[in-house]
Length: 253
Image (cartoon, rainbow, N blue to C red):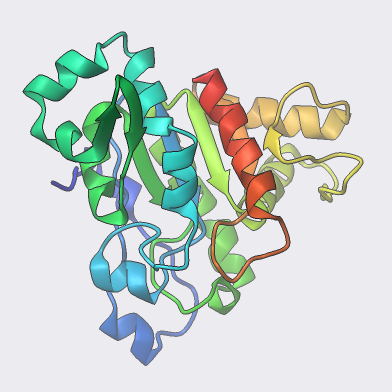
């Protein structure tokens, strides 16, 4: 079941690029969010396969669900809600499909087709831009920037404790948008300023201001994580290193 947002403003898509046959043929992929989420994952925009299937991270080469399952995100979210997984599985047929139990050791087999179902457990999904393209390079600079306010509205509505941005490029546009609001110099997220994972305990004063302003705009305090893109086309970070970051997040939930 797809969760409808409570405000049409939240689903407004700003598309400044000229429409192409691809955009006309493939549907936007709507967010899966609700109030008081535990965690939300933010991608760049849906690719062709995600648009066709109408599910997030749907391409078979995308590592998202492999990382999601191996880091036990769903299990940690359930435990954080003070529920007994064993008891919950007895009353929830979906969990019986998603969770594997072997000698009281649990693992999960969540797939892209389950993304909209996860919202009832406090796990949400959205993208910086909701329209489909073959690659993020087809999105214009202005379109990326103009969609940040919509994304912030979604965060303000859902109030997830953990905000997970799947791709540094997404975070760079959020940071750029906020620096413009603050009227400060464009902030380059170089190694001296930025590192993967939790964006906390930063030393750069401008970066501190950006993080504080984001939380002010969202209207609540959240933990922001930035992870490498999980697309199979992005191989600059090894799977083991990606999984380490995901495990660090999982351990904090």
